[in-house]
Image (cartoon, rainbow over all chains, first blue to last red):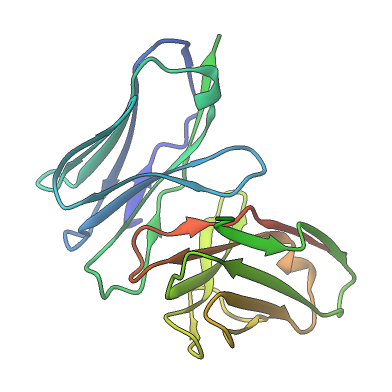
Length: 112
Length: 112
C-alpha cells in the first residue's frame, strides 16, 4: 500500500465549476501538507502549505486537512482554463523528517 | 529574486558520457534536493543536502553523485550516463526541513 494515494484522473470540468482534488494517506505521523501545481513541461509550483489540521484559504484555493480521516483536499472555486494542470499533494512528518512523500498527481482540465 | 534556477534546460548524452547539472537558489535556503520525474513513477528523490558541505542519499541515488560546496549551489553529476537515466530532473530547495520545498524549472535529459 502506498503511503499517499491520489486519483490520477484525468478530471475534466467546465469553466466556473468548483473542483475538489483529494489525497488519502496511511501515515498518521504526517503533519505538514502541501499542494503543488505543475503545468506541462514545467516544475512543480507550491500552491498551499498547511501544518496539522484545519483549513487554509488563498484566493480561489482552499486547502483542507482532516487528520482523523487521513484525508486532505484542495478546492478550486470559479475554476479557470489557466487552472488546467497536474496537481500533486505532498506531505511529511515533523520538522526533522527527511522525506517528502508525493501523490501521483491528478491531471485537471478546465474546459472554456 | 530568481528563486531556483537550473542549468542546462535540455541535454542529450550518449551512453557512457558524463555531465553535471547545476542548481542555484537565491533564497538563502539551507536544504537542497535533486529529484527525477518519470511517467508513472512520480517524483523520486535522488540526493539531498541539509547545509553547505553536506550531502545524503535519497530514494534512487545509484549512478549519481552530488556536491554542495556553496550554500546557494547544488550540483548533480552523472559519471557514466545510461539510457535508464533519461528523465526530467528537478532541483528544489527549502529553508529548513523537508516541508515547503520550492522547485526549479527542470532539466530534460535524454541518454541514447
